[in-house]
Image (cartoon, rainbow, N blue to C red; front, top):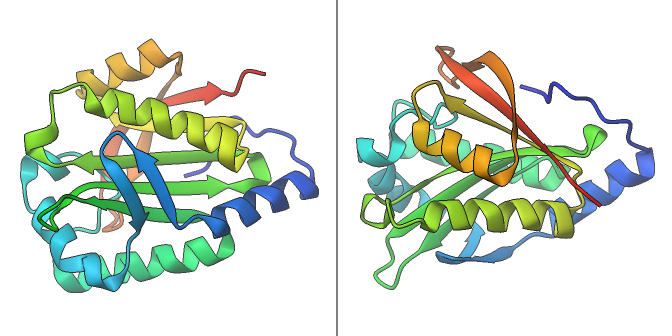
Length: 196
């Protein structure tokens, strides 16, 4: 997927975004300190994603869930990070369990990004997700320098629709979201432009 809105971006601006993405190692959030996912995180990520309340309708996840598929997904994100085009970040709790996972896709040539993620079931319905989304939006605008955030949500994900609307995202209609396994999920598409 690419953003529907294609911003005019200079080579200098695109390069600056790539450099900033490449430099990311850790990120503070309402859930704790996230770090770049590594192969060592694969078993804990698998434990998190096996819970359907967590993984549900998130179309970007590496189904079917297995340690090998998750390790390949992490490796792909490590390659994306080196190019300044993507990040996969996780937060572990005090017991070592992965409690959040965030998947970023950057399009430096459009000064745009998309991110999505999952939260452990015991942390859901506490308004932490909406606070976390706001923190991440502020971070990609301010620290990375993107000017446009795009999001997708399943048609029946009312919770996400409410969060995006409250944050000022513009509903741009429906689209097909293609999962890594090639299956398609009909989605709502949203955009939020940075205000100066």
